[in-house]
Length: 241
Image (tube, rainbow, N blue to C red; front, side):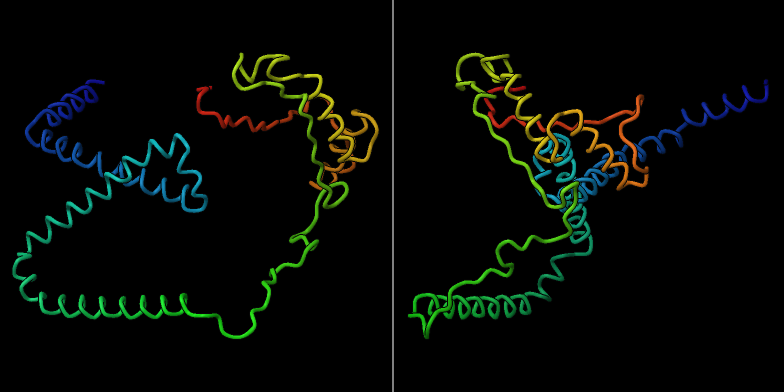
């Protein structure tokens, strides 16, 4: 035990020493770049496959750190260029840069002139009607479900009678009428499963799910847990709920 205490005291003393202070300073300098780099990677991984995710609160929080990391990298690059005597390289590369810029400018002007002439000129020859690549009533992919490909759509304006001004959209009766919502759910479920009552509809849903997921021909069993994902996105920014 004494040996452990002595080692701990030595480690604490080394940490408080001048060398330890340098280590802490260097570590503190690395915290921001590391966190910003992680934020940038996370932002790109999440947003590039689905750009709408950029509006998510977590991505809004990560974006300032990610952009700060990019700015930090640009600052490091600028410092390196200054360190290697950028003035000397600029003088050496100035003629090449001028030539490349002139060539690029003339190329853009020629391209723009040709495109403007093509768009402003008359159409030549007969114009064929546009034909979509996929013909009508030819769905893509493999149909799934109890009745493969069946989709149920249900609408009842009595379910949400809120007028947009008085009360709130989540208030009972004036915002949401639960009885109408229950009728919509029951009608949709029965139409989807081809049954005439809710009990038979749920039984068919569970049996089909279990049969297609390697669980045999079995319905719901007592004690099983169900997860329901409800989409309650509010499109009215005036209510911060």
